[in-house]
Amino acid sequence: MVQFKIKRVYEDYAEADGYRVLVDKLWPRGMKKEALKYDYWAKDITPSTALRRWCHEDIPGHWNEFTIRYQEELADSSHVADFLALIKPYPVVTLLYASKEPVHNHARILRDYLEIHLKE
Image (cartoon, rainbow, N blue to C red; front, top):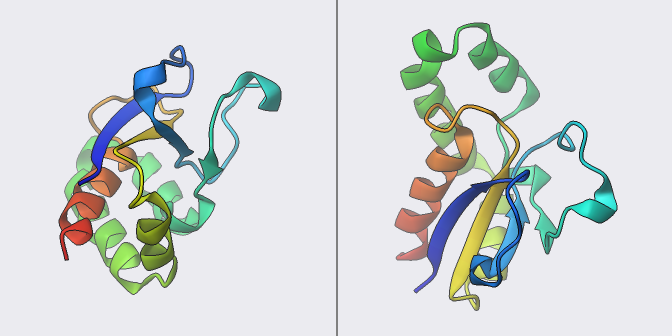
């Protein structure tokens, strides 16, 4: 079973991170590509641009609805099954995100979704 971790891209790399996956649609601001140690960039399972922009208009106010809509996007995505197959062999997968917001963060929603669907 895969153990998921969540970490900001600006935090230091650690061996314990295992397979590191960038889960933002946009490249992290101020981060040079050669400076970020990551194994895969999962752009296809991030929130859609429209949904992300809508949520950022009022993050606390839109958060519950954003969670539902993002889960629906994941359920409708053909890329999720491919991603699950990709990460299944790894004992530890760290989802990397750039947001300064540790609580209202799509990586948490993604982690919970993947944990549920990896069991299926």
